[in-house]
Amino acid sequence: MAYLDHAATTPMLPEAIEAMTAQLAVTGNASSLHAAGRRARRTVEEAREALADALGARPSEVVLTSGGTEADNLAVKGLYWARRDADPRRVRVLASPVEHHAVLDAVHWLGEHEGATVEYLPVDRYGRVHPEALRDAIERDPSSVALATVMWANNEIGTVMPVRELAEVARDFDVPLHSDAVQAFGQVPVGFADSGLAAMTVSSHKIGGPYGIGALLLGREYSPVPVLHGGGQERHVRSGTLDVPAVAAFAVAGRLAAERREGYAREIGALRDELVDAVVTAVPDAILGGDPAPEGRLPANAHFTFPGCEGDSLLLLLDAQGIECSTGSACTAGVAQPSHVLLATGTDPDLARGTLRFTLGHTSTRADVEAVAKAIGPAVERARTAGLS
Ligand SMILES: Cc1ncc(COP(=O)(O)O)c(C=O)c1O
Image 1 (cartoon, protein in one colour):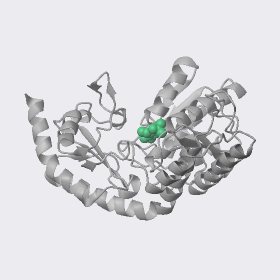
Image 2 (image 1 turned 90 degrees about the horizontal axis):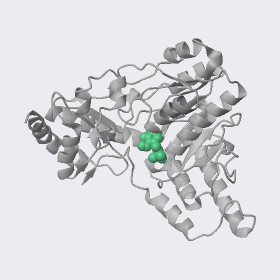
Image 3 (image 1 turned 180 degrees about the vertical axis):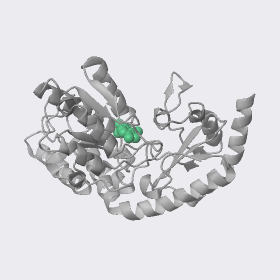
Image 4 (image 1 turned 120 degrees about the vertical axis):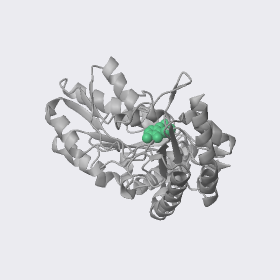
């Protein structure tokens, strides 16, 4: 088997499994005052410190959530509500059009139900938002901007955004900028304090931690209106009893992701380059998606468009050979839709149907690349023939 869908989820690290299983046997609600509760609280706070350290933040800036989706919703909706409540003129939400659905659909919902005016920032052919584009959009009417949101790195085509420069522009106008760093964490440096961001999303299951846990890094000066109301556990912006075993394991994965990032990025980048070479050798008209420059894309991402193919057919043909990857785009009612990311980069919709995303991770080996090298040529040939019949 060659698992090449690490951007969807990556296997848990043994160290994270160990931390999680140790905690599963321990009882304690981190909000309880007795000894068991205090023990759970200590585990949570140590984990928070480790996460803050791994993400270049202060512990008080780590708001634990149920994952990336919840953190994105809290940032986008919560900051919108707080900013609009403070000044009703602030209704503009500026977003990149290549965001993950957790941001894109939250932004869209604000437009449909909460009176937001959503404006999509222009992107170049690699899906990148340039700082001037953000400046132009804010400058049209700075006092009406509620927030801006631009992901750190794209989950489909791997393009890395100039987040620090974008944050500088946002700061010039006192506009909070949120960035979804779910795919960036562990692959490129994502220091929160250095970034100048107001808020940043991370998720555990993308870095070798368990599912169902993530965090919103949130500057102390921001108080988003909560999406979940209840016990007020996390800085009164996020309620819910904390999942102590998951929090402990997330922290271990986060620490290792930060410690190993440099060497990992180098090694996985070299393996990814081999995969790209192998695919382009086998299928010379395959088009590499995203920025071809190594510094402009995630080291573990390889995205291709195969003219004349349906991505779904290709995916299933490869799956039958034991190779697991993704088309990168979502299905609506079982019908493959061209990816909104590719459409935003100006790709022809017909061409955009023939995409495959290979994403590598900590368990990837040269044997995985060799399996793709062997299978991709015949799979594309079959998918093309199927497309003609
Ligand atoms: C860029 C990005 N944002 C958000 C998410 C959602 O994260 P989670 O699965 O933790 O809800 C994902 C996961 O696919 C992602 O790739």
